Image (cartoon, rainbow, N blue to C red; front, top):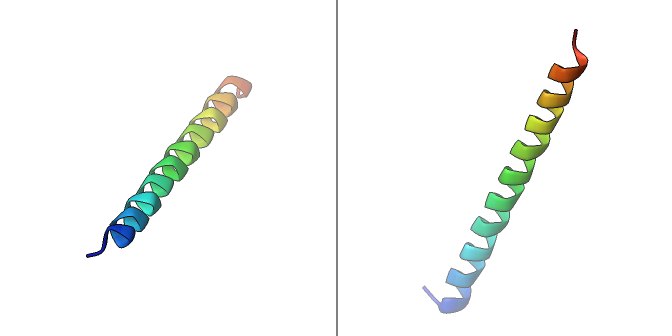
Length: 39
């Protein structure tokens, strides 16, 4: 495995982690807002 390939894999994994984290934060915010707006 070449270093460039390993770096690419790490970059993809980091990007996915940040994307998943951001999605979870957005969903939790929407959930909290919906919970607050609901009577």
